[in-house]
Length: 336
Length: 236
Image (cartoon, rainbow over all chains, first blue to last red; front, side, top):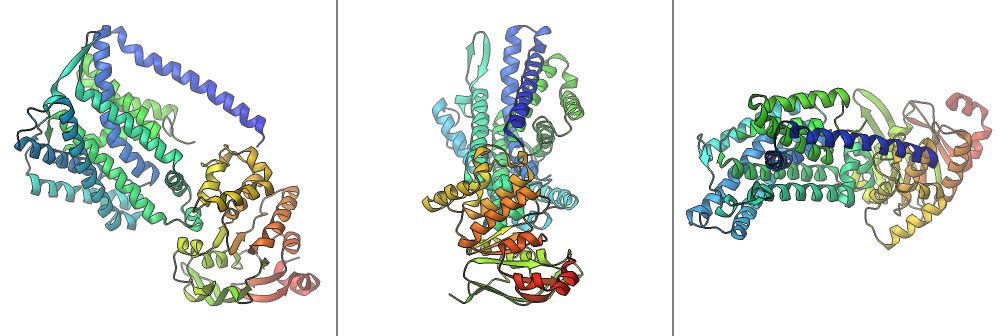
């Protein structure tokens, strides 16, 4: 291919991207027709915050589903396990009486401790699952569906044995219960922290996949495992690490969602697995950027529609998914 | 110095129920140069390379590389011992840029590999022009150049190259031949090739495989003079 042809294709791509952006911004501003600016901004911040929570679980699914090509229906269970791990840490601090009096900075410390515990437990669970179960079913989607459903049942039953079958109230550090008002818009600190965490995870994943050597190996391994092996890399070990990272991200998402909802229950993973699957399909398999944009779309549309037509809130996401798949069958950022 | 860098002793390979390699024995000396594997389609040439590389493991038999048994080693371990492999199809990563394809090849990024990279880019200057372009956007010839160039950035003791000229225009095959000539001065090469002219240009000794067995071993110039052998086994 000549340099001129590549330049021509690049120009066409830029024009198309520009048009898509204009349509996207138009849709983003559309709810202003039915609501005032303050309500719109409040819902927008809440929607982006919800989107980031969904992104945390969807990003892990993107690594496992999109990059490793593993249909992992146990992802929701990793999410729930992470939620309980975080809940346990917060409960421990609460038993010391520290949660109720926590300032914003000490609240952040408790959050980081809970997230570290969740990520560690999630990653460990991911390593065990990959080594014992997934390794044997790479490339076989039907078997992956069956065994990961089984893994999900096992994990949820373990959750029930350890923490019981009932919902538990999650102690939320006092610093996160505060809020501030900006231009008439009521903003909770926890929503801002969620957005910062989501954007941070997105940036780290992008950097990891695009700029680091291990990211190159992962992307290469997804495309052609043989070349990676014949180059001298132990692809099995790398895939185990990616699976563990995906499970760890789900667990982090679980802890954040537990604080957001102020409760945990053993079946909480199933509901959010549906959101994550919608996001991954909208964004395009294996695209972290796609998942990020998809999560924001899902979070915003859920919030706007929940305000305008509450009964349509979940349904609108399925509609968006269907429309996007009709226009772009491989998702917004899926590779043709 | 005259110890074989690679030897196969009565190697049998099965793919499913098919008995592909049926007791192949080969010896290749450590010094540079190119050994050519010739034979009709389905003779077992590519399977021989894949078996050596551990991608299609041998059922029985012994394979020694640099004096060590490798028949039970994993592919990445064999690669790290100094064996490079350019497979027949899709030997580059389409979704990675040319630069990333090269970075992937450098198991260790150090002064030596960067020096090698500069040498390789002198050998294949077209690749420098498309440095930030995804390999999937390159032409067939450029992709093949990249496939060979990327294994050359590491110092391999042995390079296995499977049908590099397949599907390429004659002018590109000529360029490829020149590149292979320069490569074989530095590194021992085992080349599977259907294009006999390219094979003769690059190689010194050759093996002919037929039905998974070695039916000829000798100098390629001698083979070129043996009309019966050429017709029976290569259809030329």
